[in-house]
Length: 96
Ligand SMILES: [Zn+2]
Image (cartoon, rainbow, N blue to C red; front, side, top):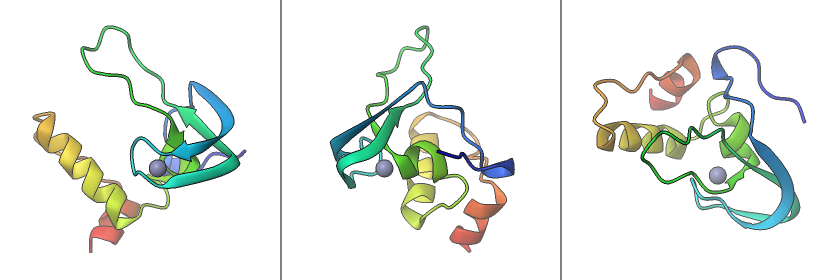
């Protein structure tokens, strides 16, 4: 599967498989055989590792963001104590 280019590019997934279930980030369900994956994870960070993500959250959410994706980014940045969210142009357009 192709990954987006340019400003919407996310890190390469750590692992990908076909499965059925629900996304750990957005909560959408994915059908049997849909590709899901996990993000790269640094063992030294004292956070719980992110679960399995749907293809949209894993690969496309910075390039083709939904309003829900932007809201999740703001929510996570707020609770991580970050001073800025760092939205890209696609996310700014959705916010407008
Ligand atoms: Zn998702």
